[in-house]
Image 1 (cartoon, protein in one colour):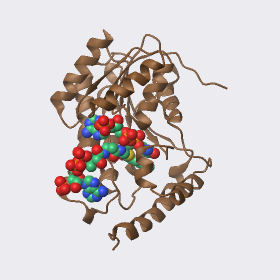
Image 2 (tube, helix red, strand yellow):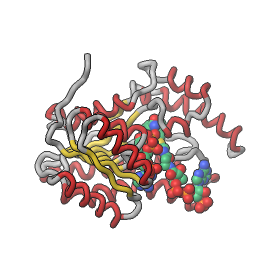
Image 3 (tube, helix red, strand yellow):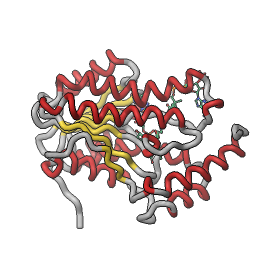
Length: 275
Ligand code: HXC
Ligand code: NAP
């Protein structure tokens, strides 16, 4: 059965939406009829993503900014609502950085770079977007990660930052509920063909072990995340707010912890960082 939604007449903004999971989410909303704006740091990635969305028949544009720069984020969101000619119905915030390193293998600036992109960037996108969100009616989705609630060696920066992201989600569900804005997190499992998996499962053997560790027995597809975002943003999600929703084939129940622990042993050998 082909899953379909109707977002015609809706305006969707995807921060960090030019590759991987977030671009897959942008493509989903484009296919389902929305006007879509994507943003990330690199103009060439923005241009390619916008072309990809137009190829699906969507009205689309994009902006190049770094989520660590509040004024640039605010300018990009203002540009988006000018393009839309109206408010933002669906806001996806998913810009993130990740590299595997034990804490003692990270400089203070390395820690700061990930916390600033993932957590401070989420604060910036939320704060700058609020005045542009459809009130009542907007759906806000932060893209989190299993690291938010599962400790993993080589991931202290991401674990802390994404835990923070989910608490931003849950707090804004309270603060913005009165404006008629729903705020949720989606926690993707291991998604095939993405930068995140290339960094955390860097060999075919580790990737195969990850796949086997998922109770549903397969890696996720970006479209799995797009469909969950659409469900949360459709009328089906009208009473859902403050939820941290794993979309992971059951991975975070058990498999994520055991397989990432094995991956950490491999990384110890590769990097010499093991204790
Ligand atoms: C230790 C490292 C490092 C590494 C970078 N650094 N890589 N330290 N081990 N492997 C250090 C640098 O030396 C520097 O510190 C500091 O981090 C900042 O590096 P820059 O390259 O100057 O930063 P910047 O250009 O801002 O790039 C940010 C980045 C980069 C996070 C480092 O990798 C990036 O742009 N990533 C975006 C794409 C990405 O990561 N996608 C995957 C998301 S997946 P010093 O002290 O030398 O200045 C995800 C979850 C996946 O989030 C979950 C799967 C289950
Ligand atoms: P990705 O392709 O690297 O996506 C990251 C996006 O964020 C890119 O569009 C990137 O574009 C942008 N970005 C990075 N730093 C930015 C910054 N400082 N300012 C603005 N934009 C920035 O990675 P992915 O693996 O698909 O991950 C996407 C999201 O899913 C992330 O939030 C990640 O934590 C989450 N996640 C991924 C997995 C997985 O299996 N891959 C699992 C769980 C959670 P530019 O380089 O142009 O800036």
